[in-house]
Image (tube, rainbow, N blue to C red; front, top):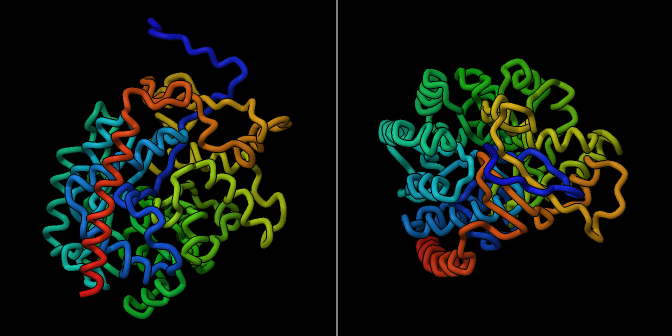
Length: 403
């Protein structure tokens, strides 16, 4: 029996948005790492910040990020976690009600990160396996685990091979970054002897359980490898633009048959986690190179919903509004000055509406946002906790950088 009937007359009702690549541990670093290219951004800001996290600051960061995501219509995420305190992220997601797949970020090769973020190979695998045992399937299946080696430069061949094998054996995701930046890609070629995605293929780490963030700098051969393997690419336009990494050839990837999702990446490189912003950028930035109309608005919406669900292996449960699927539902108020009139609902979603236009959010049928208000959340307390946690973490990281 229905417990409540929600009046959605005059509203847009869409599937919950799915972001298959985020960094909740970086939400506290919003605006603290501007004006840097990827490798400098990591080595002089992000890695020192992450190393300075405590369990309590990680909780504050994850809580702020999850609530921002829910408030703007994202109901499902794939989170990269961090080397330490990944349990705190799981705990926040369990309590907040978001659908989340999370992994402990793994790094066992020193590539400029603080010692606190460089694990021994066996320890990284052991801790990841323990987290998978503890959390995969928790919260009535709402929480899942992914094995998450950070990127090729910070991971040994042994770690990448073992991680991919364990992930496949257990039916879990293999989630990493690939070919984000031209300098990163050149270093991979110099150190590993082949291009980034081709190297992952060589190791047996390119398969339908693989989720690769970015994939900006690809050879034609690598595009074909991605399509043939069934691996999933996550397009992160805000992050790629802000870090000056480049613009992924998204129309070519789609034409080649590559599976693509859409995500904001993190607050440290996109400054917000609003999936509507990513949809708008994805619909715009490819036009100068490939021509207006190279991507239909409907394709962009599909990437932000069913494309993300496919990346997570959850397309039979979420990503579209169908009988028998989970009730991950977003209600949007289109009667806005900036969204009136509209002749096409997909154009409206991609180019006019924003996260703050979301009225209601349901995850597994449970209301998480009603009338634009987060349910059972003291937003003031969350903001205060974030402010209190950010200052000492950034100060500690700054001191470490100076020494």
